[in-house]
Image (tube, rainbow, N blue to C red; front, top):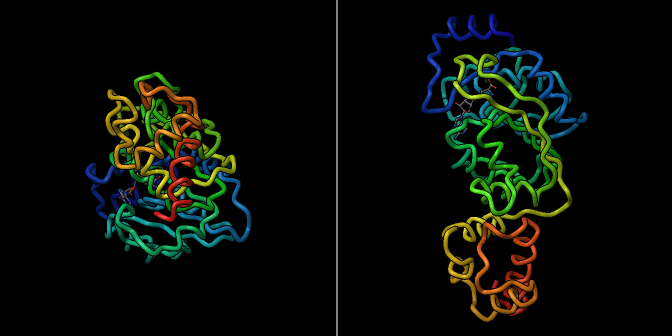
Length: 272
Ligand code: SAM
């Protein structure tokens, strides 16, 4: 959908874009094409789109021979998509953050022009649940991109940087100015593509990484008090960490190793 088609659609259906839902509709066909292309979708893939809005990406996805599931919080927009002859998708009208039993592990690809106000939580839920996704393509705000690609010992470094790095590689497909959306946000966005490196992310790992950063100014050990002290001490020893180490100093892989040490020790003792 180009700008003219987007504006016409919005007017025709009396849509007032809801800022509370982060509704900035993408209206640049080149950017839409680059998102679809970078997703590397193959015939037969199961694709999950979060926040289809008025269908800028959905209309292109539906042209592929795939099984497409869309989750849209705005019931009115979801209804319009469902009634749209051009669109062949299962449309779920719910808050993705509350969604359960949607076959998360069956999706091959996840795509979203992410609603910025819940971007981090949505990405974490996808990491925790869509555990077999072989590709994730997102539109994110530039400041979110900084958090995603941040290195240890920087202010932006946090759970999202760690989880994205554990998942695999993050590449920037293109930068997207505000003028490519209706209405135009003040900020610049970026399309990013996440390719897996083979590490399995689970709900428990996401929780673990979140916990590690819960008190980022304190020593990491303070955040690990909910785990057995002896197990944590052994894991520290195995990793060569001093008691003073802080979460923001650790490389992403260190969180994975620490998690494995703590959780594996737990399961060997039969406490999982
Ligand atoms: N995909 C469309 C596009 O590219 O033009 C719309 C993108 S717009 C930035 C974000 C969309 O996510 C909106 O349609 C909004 O209603 C929807 N949304 C916001 N919060 C959501 C949530 N928690 N669960 C599902 N959809 C949500």
